[in-house]
Image 1: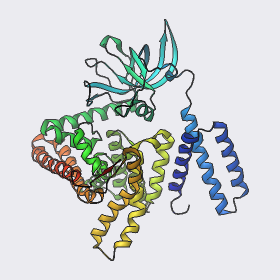
Image 2: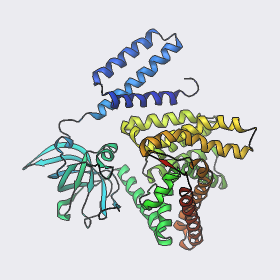
Image 3: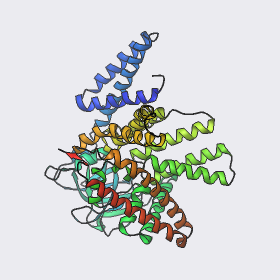
Length: 474
């Protein structure tokens, strides 16, 4: 445990969460395992092998307990009264996300956000309650912002599982710690309550307005496909990507480039650091301001698991440089996993969490070994590029096979072409946003360049997906 203790601790904690879902032990059993492991650890503290094993057992037991506590449903939770059939409800609560437009492949467009219930009305009386639900407000109702307190009258139901289409709404709600869907069809069923927003709410609303401004900038200067790529690569919103295009990215094993993660974080930190170097700010302050820009970008993109992972690792890198010493990338990966799972153990079941951490683990563990193996056979740049592609592909392939029932051997070649192309596209997108915020005329040629590059990558991925043997399905 001396080389990367945080990575090993995170693996043990995640294993405990997985065991809790698989075996469903009681919380009493988890507490017993914690006490027993702690006692053995105290007795055998002079024996490194035994003490390390007991420490990992203790951490795994903490993971089990964390998952069991998360699974408990209190008696006053709204989840206790939900059924598959919609039922009327009058409740108060708080908007805990941005409310955005959703354009599903089937059905009409609608607004959707996340809503935390604080109390419900039973007859003429109000009673405390809680629970998180997906909110579908009226299409033509008042605009809703993060932090708004609202009185709602509508219909609430539990999540549905549509076996024929393979869509599992209940699982998606569970992953977001939500228990149902609240629909308000009439604007008269929604009343905004007076409330004074705190500093965090004001910041989140500013982030939402800035995000909307960037989206409007893209749509004003680009076509629908190019604007969708801009939103996907820079803002982490891939709903505008056509289904056929997304399927092509999935079949070539490069769907990860549509997710905001390490590429964007690295570019943001690099651009901020270079910009601060030009104005001759001290080296220590440069790293601190670069770290602040990473936090801002993380909130701007929604703070999903891939961007959280990359942000934590970036913050550790900046902190290490600020203090004048190197940090372990594996420890940073472990710390990111621990933080995300401590905040919500259900993230472990999220496909994006699994793919992001698996890919990074392959890059950090397998790729260096492959570089050394091929260094005497290939040129250095070729060995490093192929090793990065192979290392990430090896570790994410089991995840892809489990969830999507497919293997994508074409990814070994596709990554070599698509990742550098995507990196250039992301950098061009950042330049476009910066230029557009300063002067719209200056952004016109950058928008044209971004559009040509996005169209070219789109055609490349579709062509790769059409090659024989690109993906194997079962």
